[in-house]
Image (tube, rainbow, N blue to C red; front, side, top):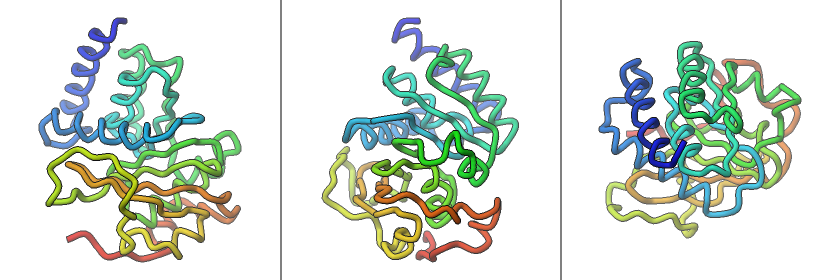
Length: 228
């Protein structure tokens, strides 16, 4: 499949995701732009290993990244059967099965699986959950040096596209002391049309995490200022 054909097929796949109500009602151009923001953040440094998207849903950003960069190897994780069925169909349609795997499980379960624990170079999270939940579900799956890249509320005053490393993540959402429990260190935030927080796995996540499915949501490890 040529690059042009792959892009055309991707548009058809994403249209099907919308038909199945697996992506939101924003214009598809906005969904694509958001996914490309993830890609810019990811490629700020060399990607040394596989990438995991938690809560992959309708394949944004995972499918976009896989089509845009043929060197990336991804695992798309979701706990909803209908999302997993769609993602498997989409991977087949886009001829990505050699480097994209779809897994049906909760993130807490995957974090206890020896095949996946501490094995990912990067984890992507788009609308997965509150920061404390996202951090606890992601940290056990990251190898030391790996990055957690999370979609954040956009900077209302920013209209330019920048992928810089000069601004820390919002400390009210990503408190350093809370993240430290999981071996994570907040590194920087990206302020552009869509915002992103980037955290680094600076030490292995302690064995006691993740807790049982649902517990990270019921009893979060740290609190943060709620979104307004």
